[in-house]
Image 1: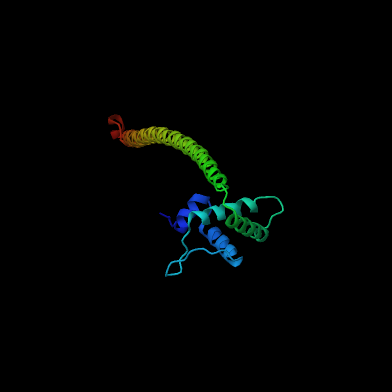
Image 2 (image 1 turned 135 degrees about the vertical axis):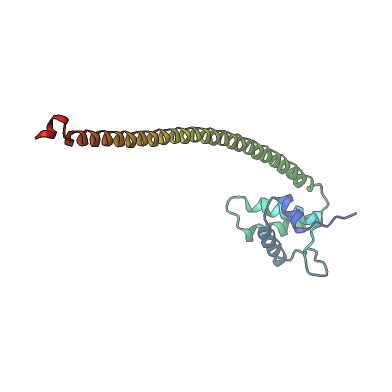
Length: 184
């Protein structure tokens, strides 16, 4: 049974994005390579297409190879494959396994980074909670100080009133005629 891969499956297998896959497919089709299309014109990829695309990527990574030259090399490789039946397909599958190992390694690295970021986030949350507690304590102290200041101001006002009343009593007493001054 032959499996037809969707573009998203091939993107995942090769580790490329959709525009890159589309560009590679158009390039290969321009050089005469046939990629299956359904009745809606959407591409479907067989195992041989995935291997061919993997080979194109492999060739394009070599120094001095442009995509155009890589496509020509792939077409030569495909025509040689069609002429002789060899077990060269094992190498790309091995490359797929290596890529899987690379992905596992990348996956592990990403998981480690995520764990580190989660640890940093937890530390930040702890720090912010401690800061909020400190700020609440400071606000409570400020409120206590304001209450104390208000009470002191009230006491000062009351003292001022008492002093003023006492002063007025003393002035009134001083202005009163004493009993011996009534005969004058």
